Amino acid sequence: MMNKESKYFTTGIVYDERYLDHRTGNHPECAERLTAIYQYLKEKGILKETKEIEPYLAPLEVVEYIHSKPYIESIKKLSEMGGDMLDMDTAVSPQTYEVALLAVGGVLAAIDAIMARTIKKALCLVRPPGHHSMPERGKGFCIFNNIAIGARYIQKKHDLKRVAIIDWDVHHGNGTQAAFYDDPTVFYLSIHQFPHYPGTGSENEVGINEGKGYTMNAPLTAGADITTYKKVFEERFLPTMKSFKPDFILISSGFDAHRDDPLAGINLLEEDYGLLTRMIGALAEEICNGRIVSILEGGYNLNALKLSTYEHLCGLMEIEGRREKREQ
Ligand SMILES: [Zn+2]
Image (cartoon, rainbow, N blue to C red; front, top):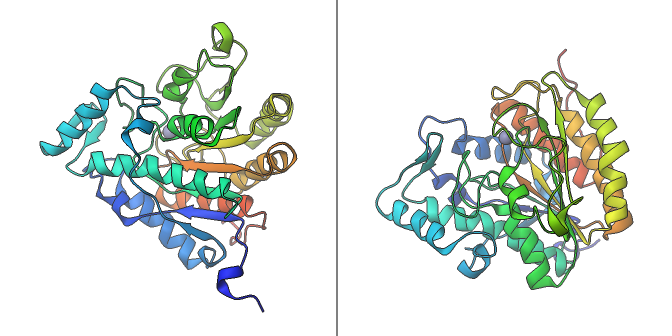
């Protein structure tokens, strides 16, 4: 029998109780989201089969790959002064600056572990989320753009050339798209409800200059379900990624396209996230040694969120979801 040290884990999990210290008050993006997920994964016994990856505070020069110094400094100051609202729906609390650095650092730690071949894939259960965050300002519940910084980190620290970002959060990742809009080395693919917050992500947003053709948006009208998602994946996203040949795949994994989510109108079920994950996982095996880091974005119905995250994790671990049959 193998001892614990020699056990090979394919999937790492980033989680830290300090992620709960970003306080948002009475807000859909609350600390309970993370505890609901973590408790459920624990209950299901699946964490024992994963490797715990410890996050660290992201170095400022890495956060500066995407964000301006003055913006980073402004978040630090706002936190030190006791916090405030950044805009109508984005809160900064006393611990937010540090927690946001730790969210970025969770993604970096996951990437490091994959590059060190400790694990093959990782799921980062981090908050605050990131994909709406712009170089000069946070918005839409997001402070630092975790996934965009991660993509640059893969290129600059680990010398890989091409990164694909798949964003299935129900909202368009305007911050991530903006970060790489003129860049042919990071392919941004997003499937989201449209029209909806933040208003961007139409079909004709495809990148500019050298980046033209390296942004792909699949806007869906409210009411869409897995049939449409499957079609978009099979006919557009997967073939596109296959010819792009990324060295690494990142997923902006929001679970707010679930049928029960209060902030949107798409009708995915939790098991659909498992299906989409397996589709991406199979492709990753073929083109980038299976390297995937998935990063939590939205998802605001706690029950749907925990069930969907579990299905997604099972997909990453290439095991069947051992979920109870859903009550119809
Ligand atoms: Zn969202």
